[in-house]
Length: 189
Image 1 (cartoon, rainbow, N blue to C red):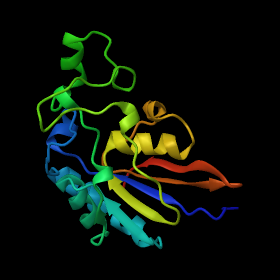
Image 2 (image 1 turned 90 degrees about the vertical axis):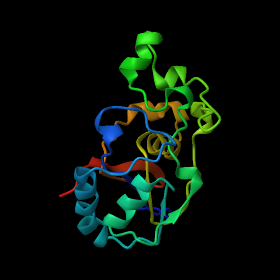
Image 3 (image 1 turned 120 degrees about the vertical axis):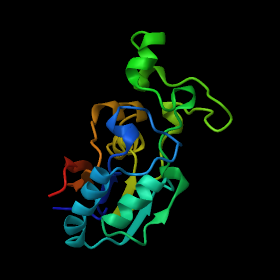
Image 4 (image 1 turned 60 degrees about the vertical axis):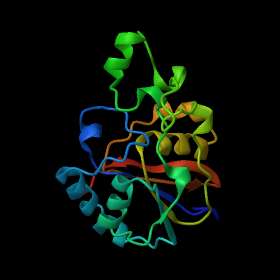
C-alpha cells in the first residue's frame, strides 16, 4: 500500500553522440541523436497512462527535447537538474582519464577543476531537492543516480550503485511509508 508520498518518475535523456561514445557530458549542450529521439518518443505511451501532476527538466537541450518527445511539453526547466559539472573531465571518457590517473573512479575520486565554464563539482554538491506528489524529472544519468541515492536515504556517492541507460524510465515511490525503487532503467516499449 502506498503512503502519502507520491511517485517520482525519472527519465534519463535519450542518446547523444557523447553518451553513445562514453564521453562525460556535464554542462556541454549536446543534442539527441536520431536514436535518442526515437527512444524518447517511445516513452510517451507509458507516460500518457500516468497522471503526472508536475514535470521538470534539466535546461540542457537533450533533456528538454526528451521531455517534449516523451509527451511532457510543459516540463519546467530547473537548473538543479543540470548534470554533474565534470570540470576538467568534461568531454573525456573514463579510459582517457584513467590513462592519466590510473584507477580513477568518479564516485570516489571526483573531478579536477576545468575552465571558467566547467569549474567542477564534488559528489556532495550534486543533489537537487525532492518534491512530494507525482512528479516527472527529465535529466541526466549521474544527477538522477545521486537523486535516487538521496531518495533512498543513502549518501550521494551511493548513486554509483544504480546504472542508468539513456532513454529509460525509472520510478521511485514508497512501500509502508519507506522510500523504495518501484521500477528501474526500463527501456521504452
